[in-house]
Each structure stands twice: as C-alpha cells, then as structure tokens.
Image (tube, rainbow, N blue to C red; front, side, top):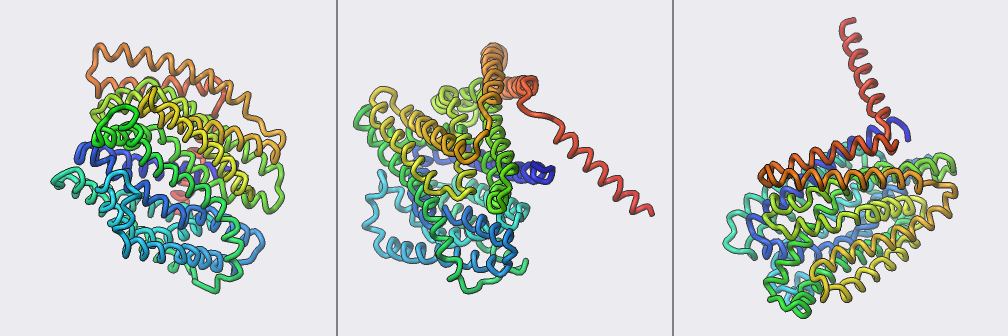
Length: 512
C-alpha cells in the first residue's frame, strides 16, 4: 500500500470517526430526551425507511465508483458522465413511484410497523428517499474519482446538521412519539443539505448529465446483486424490529411498551457501540475499493494480492484492538452514556463478535471490487438464515440477547464463506499467523483490562472509572499488539517526517 493510500485512509478515517462520534453522541442525547421508548419508535421507523433506501440505491455508490474507475483505466473520459447519469436515472425510476404510492396510500402501510406511532415518523422522512438516493450516486462519483475530501466533508456536515437540529427539537417534545417525529424532521433536513451540496460540487468540477443508455445496463447488472444483498439486510433489520418486540411479548411475558423499550436498548444503545468498527472498516473500504478495482481490471495480480492481504490484516487489527476496550469498559459505558446497565452488559458479553463482523465487512468490499457481487449475495443469505434461526430458538432462553447472538452467527458464517472464495481468487493469501499473534495480544489485554477496571470500581465513580479503565486498556492493547508485531509505527513516522520536510521546503522557498 503506497504512502498516499495510507494518508488518504487516515484522512477518511479521521472524518468518519468524527462523524460516527457525533452520531453516537446523538444517540445518547436522544436516549435522554425521548427515552428508550421514543428511541425504539425512531429506530423502528428508520429501519423500515432504510429498506426502501437500500433497495433504491445501496448498490449504486460502489458500482458507480467501480465503473468510473474502469472508464479511467480504459482512458474513456466520456463514459464517466454517462455512468453518473445512469445512476441517477436508475434511482429516480425506483424512488419517485415508490414515494407517490406510499404517500397516497399511507393508511394501508401501517402493517409495516409493530407500533402505529412509527408511521408518522416514517412519513416525515419518506421524501428524503428521492434526494438521498441521488446523493448516493454523487458519493460513488466522488469515490471513483478519488475525491475523498469533498465526500468526507459533506458526510460530516450532514451528520453535524442532523445532530444539532435533532438535539434542539427533541428536548422540546411533549412525549416519546413527538420526540421521535422531531428527530425524523432532523434526518430529512440533513438529507436535503447533502443532496444540494453534492450536486453543486459535481457541476462545479465539470460534471455533466448525458445520455445514460451505454452505461445503464452494466450499472444495473453490477449493482442489482449488491442492492439485493443490502436490501435483504435492511429487510432483515426491519423484520427484527417487528419480530423482536413481538417475541419478547409472546415468549417473555412483557408488555408492548416494555418490549419496544427493550428493543430500543439493544438496537439503539448496545448495537451502535458494537458497530464502532464499521466506520473504520468503511474508511478502508472507501479508499481501497477504487485501488482494488484498478488493479483487478489492469491484471496487476501481485499488487491485488498484496492489497487484499493488507486489507484483511487491517480488519483483524481493528477488531483485536477494540475487543479488549469493550470487554473491560463496556458495562461502564452503558451506565455512564445511557444510564442503562443492560446495554453495557450486552456490549461486554458480545464484543467478541467484532472479529467476524470486521472480516465479513472487508471481504465483502474486496469481493465486490473483483466483480463477485453474486457470490457475496449468496453468502449473505446463508448468514441471514442463521440470524433468524437464532431469534426463533434463543429468545425464550436469553430474551433480547438473541438479537446480538443472531448478528454474531450471521457474521461468522458470512466471513467464513467470503474467506473461502477469496482464497480461491487470490491463492497464497495469508492471515492465520497474523490473526493468531493478534488474538494472543487481545487475550492478554482483555485480562488486564478486566482486572484493572474491577479494581478501579472500588475507588472511582463510574465516569472516572470509564475513562481510566478505557485509557489503561487501550494503552496496554497498543503495546501488546506492537510487541506481537501486528502493526508498525514506520508509516506514521515516515508520514510525519515527510510532512515536516514539506513544511521546511515551503518556508525555504518563501524566504528565497
């Protein structure tokens, strides 16, 4: 991986981390402002909306990025605008009719929600389906042209706007349902913002809308399997949002309000903490996908293999670095951030799922970059089946824990199947030895973190214990992973030296 890719990955990761941190803080604010019940209503409405959004455009950014990379590799600059126009056409052909049908017949769509109050939130966000689908095409165009800074800034600004507006609106709500509706308004306004800014930037940089017919067929053939997989994931999330409260009522004897609140704890509090690595994996995927596609289309076998191996190692490193932190401080995080001990217990007990989750995410990106979208779709379905089985079989015994257990099972199966295919496509790719060293360091860090945190609980209040335990565990983990040679400081040192050298040259030129 070249120095420029490390630099770009670090840049995208920084903005993505800030963005996800804002979203995480927003979850805390909402949980305080509208409670677990309001958060559950908001979460259910968003999960149903995400099904339509995913069906409309989830495969488009990756496909637009890959097709633009292909056009650049072939030297066909005229085809780039056709790819973007084809993406916009495809999304509008789906989203406009869907929005009209749902808006005109909204009274017939209440069956989509386990709680009728969710429909009001959903209808507020619904118009955003059209505009954010167009924005997804712009996002893919940014990726394909390696314009990562504009993409990062727009994403960050969109999230910041949603957080500020949502926080202001939610605290003035009369009840949980009203608070959820106001949070929905903030989501819609943020979609309008990113849509307007991305179009402005695209045309400012010379982008055009042209006849899309030459690129429409290849775009659809590549994007449909990805869209099918991600739509299935959204459908699965929506199904869980409906089934989980229902199963808790039927099998665990809870009331409707208790069940929705319990689901809000798991899906709105615990799972977002467990999904922290997704932002880091997403940053790597955004930067690496065009590079992988370019090497694939130009038949650079050795470079492709090297990038695949580094991607897998990066995903494993992220997982093994974060597992000790969540294992040691997860319970305290739930109590401090959400005033809810159950959310912290779920994080603490289920943090091991980070490894299969990270491997599943990165292998899916790598395989899609190598034109294996249909294979990743099949592998996803195998994991989804395992999740549904876990929900049905485990809820009577473990209650809401069946949800994270199902997620873990789906990631284990998907990552295993993806790795099997990847080793066939890139024989000789090695991960086992690296993973074994990282796992040993992770185990030591978990033991240290738990012992340190339990000791500090006797002397410090929860907030201080969270920071002290988290900082000590993170430092120990960094040293342990470095000692096991799972990462090197040389790229960082070289980048800093290069930056210092550049600054010196600039100052010297100014003096002359």
